[in-house]
Length: 174
Image 1: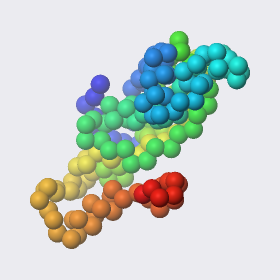
Image 2 (image 1 turned 135 degrees about the vertical axis):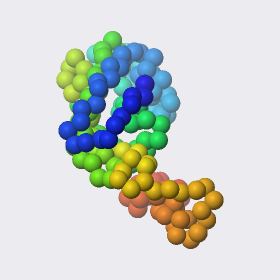
Image 3 (image 1 turned 60 degrees about the vertical axis):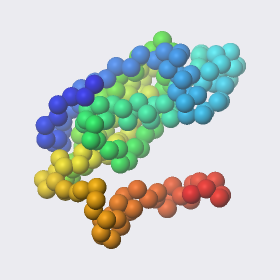
Image 4 (image 1 turned 90 degrees about the horizontal axis):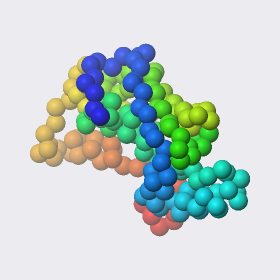
């Protein structure tokens, strides 16, 4: 659900989002992210490894955090940085409540501290930096036909992977 958002200010609190943790959500998230570890789909295997049940993987959590932010900031929102850490596991039958607090605003970019808690404690903590083009003090107007070298260089720079991300890829991938 997208909410109407006025100017974003430091200290703004995002409305909470409750997410029911179902077995289907846990398994589907693991399959969608190609995480075939048995602890995300096989309850008996999870129990043998010390967990009371299957549990959500980090990529599903990452996606839910991203959804929380983009649902709040609207369809033009672009996630620029997501830095999260997992804590207590999300098991089926529980509910995770995501909350957010705007910690920094610079132009059209905002950094939001996010916490996702369940009955066991904090499942996820971290920060998300999001931009909403045109929401800063001086909106940038671009057309899709702007093919000048300056515009093309900016576009390529914006979408190019960071050296750190490229270095982390398996050899032969870029």
